Image 1 (cartoon, helix red, strand yellow):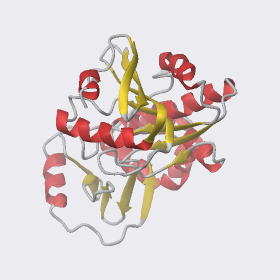
Image 2 (cartoon, one colour):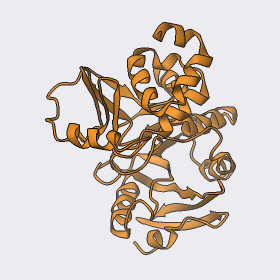
Image 3 (cartoon, rainbow, N blue to C red):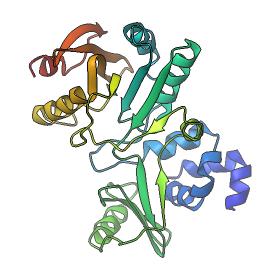
Length: 286
């Protein structure tokens, strides 16, 4: 059935619509995951992976297209721009930005990171998926789905709570990198480089000339103290005169964002897109 579905995209798309089956199916074909071409299947899978910080892995193509030109204008002065795109989810919006810069013939290095980009799988009658902090994300007991939210009936949550109490495996059978197949291909060509980075903990010193942090440092996710910690770490990772883009996509899919430049170890406001970032004042008061 697995081989048939890989060759029959309509069948794969139908299966991906069934919440209690699609994760099991994706895990079974994980070795062939980069071969999946259907955006419907990919979006359904990524959109329903919720990790420990209560964010999902969902993003979409052309999500930040209105930010490309102002970003490009602000990075023009750097002959070799070193970019860090933070919390990229499945990375497809990073791929869009990279392609835009290539069309503009802008010389650059492109790094992406996401704290929860990878899940660890332990196979068996109880198949369990963990994030990189060993938090259970979802599981299967036989064919029964277990998740930390009610899909159809309370059994999914009950199973999750019971499985969550079991010991974390010492070894896992394999890891699955939750990046879009297009991004994985670019990584193989070394056009895009993945780095392990936790914006709240990782120490990187004066490496990047352009940093983008979209839809991560939101007040709906983190309190002001946490956001200040993240921004301080980001600032440390930026070279003098480097540019920071930070913002949030609202419910109407409008990007409210702000640009800052690092000058004398301060982040100086440059310009706003639409309403600007909701954390602009927090950044300016650091």
